[in-house]
Length: 142
Image (cartoon, rainbow, N blue to C red; front, side, top):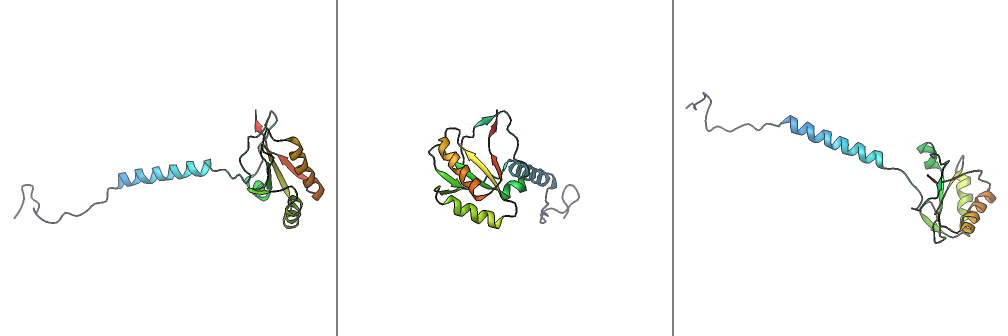
């Protein structure tokens, strides 16, 4: 028996995948993934309120930054090796191990703007004693 429009009535309908909404969803997911991946920055140190400097420059290549060790001093005077809390006494051994394993050892210094300067100088002094020459101080641009 034929329906009004010449087709078979009552037969099973075939499922169709609508391609336009699928493309919209894929573009949305792609844009979201790109925005999230661009906003992710690798920061090995702990969060501190960095001092401001008019001559602040970017730390350069991301690969170079990944090879460097980040030493942080927060406002309470606590010292961190990357994100691991350590004491000043533990710092020389960690730096010697880093210097022995790294081909071109670099240290990035993060210091809270309100940290006691004697703690920052003590950390920099230990880095100098070990013989690591490449030391960068992380600041924010004014």
